[in-house]
Image 1 (cartoon, rainbow, N blue to C red):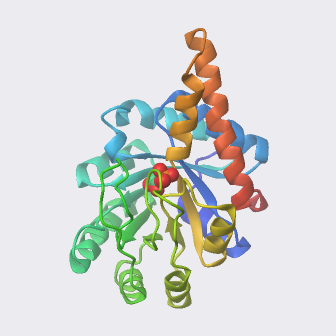
Image 2: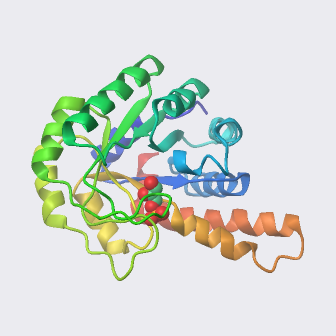
Length: 274
Ligand code: 13P
């Protein structure tokens, strides 16, 4: 099946009131597990890798594997660069054939974040690739460093969407990457305000540890891409322990990644898209 574009998947998800799972992958086991889950559920998915993970999963190795698995899948699969931080890395992903990229300018002042996002939009345009940006600060960085969480303001979301014309916007509403210390407290009032004035599909980062009920509320309030990373990494790591040989371990890791994806595809209800 041809590669899917995240822009199309998210606009369909918005229309149908569901979310597409964006699963972070770092190995062939994880790629295989996520694709097997998507095929079993007959649901589209997004395969993604974050720039900060490239030292252990180099783009020139993991990228072609993701793209090849996506093309061979019998369901639509988009291939996405998560938390892109530098223009050369984003350009490499686009040239390789990724169908979307994220530029994470969330640590920059608003005007600089908008200007950088526009630069990435211009880079992505000849490839017809979609672009995701982020405003506010998600607690903890994708690589696990502590970062003070700061909710996005509805005013900033409206300004950002208007000035950047970005395809998907990650908004921080109290969510955090990695393992939450205590139960996550998402600010649905802020999300509701953003949703009222912002038509762009929104993205929820830090999916690991969010309750089913909160996922459903987020989706109802406009989050149509939901990122899951830590849950998969933990499950795969756990599955690798105690295996008798490499191939048994690899099989267990694939099954663990598949289980995580199956569970989230059900909660996100993305099978309604096919
Ligand atoms: P988790 O690691 O909390 O699942 O977050 C994933 C994410 O947002 C990747 O960008």
